[in-house]
Amino acid sequence: MDILLYILIPLALGMWAQMRVSGTYRKYSEVGARSGLTGKDVANYMLKRFGIHDVEIVPIRGLLSDHYNPTNKQLALSEQNFYGKSLAALGVAAHEAGHAIQHAVGYRALKLRMALVPITSISSQMLPFVIIGGFLFGIAGLIQLGILVYLVLTVFQLVTLPVEFDASKRASVQLRELGILESDEMVGVHKTLNAAGWTYIAAFVASLGNLLYLLHLTQEE
Ligand SMILES: [Zn+2]
Image 1 (cartoon, rainbow, N blue to C red):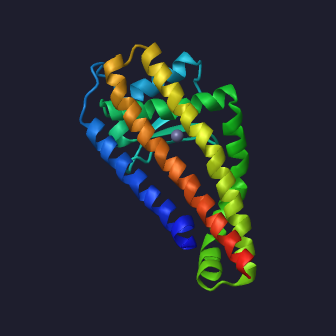
Image 2: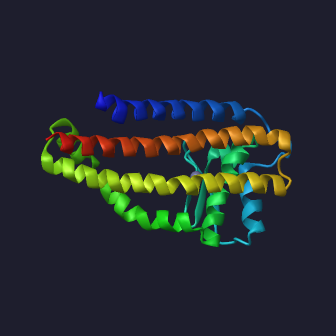
Image 3: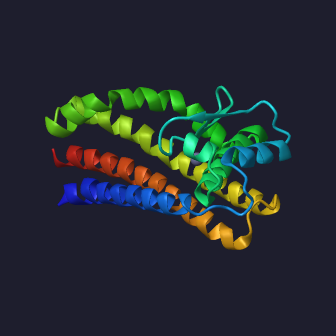
């Protein structure tokens, strides 16, 4: 029963969120925005409005591989969004520009998230040991290590939530204020960004579920 609650339900939520984001993205990738601007243009306008001139906007390969890297100040947009003129492309580009703005204005949750990156990546590297030794073989020491690892990952995913929702909020505000999209076009943007938001909620729930499951294992002994 416990495995259902802690592991399988979060897993199902994650799969649902992933399917939803792919479906919504695909749908609004086919709806062109009336402005005729590309994702790159939109990101560019937003950065300029905030007086940000040291962020480079680059196209990258892959589906929904879009991200902002604060260490080299690179705003990477997947080719489909960099060159694209759809509601989905503009929404995603504006969201990533939202992260660059967070960085420029010193948004606290982003700073905290950046500070957590080194310990989070070390924790991620330990996951194979924890999963095989802890979950599968029930080795006590690795269950203990797993609790630490998932504690770090859960905190990281939790801090990621305000960062992601704030970037989407900044995207919506800017797309309207800069007159890039009209209110009827914002529906598609909101749906795309909300669907993406759910994948971060699912990631948090999955980490928390793993953490609680391991804690539960130590209680049984
Ligand atoms: Zn984001």
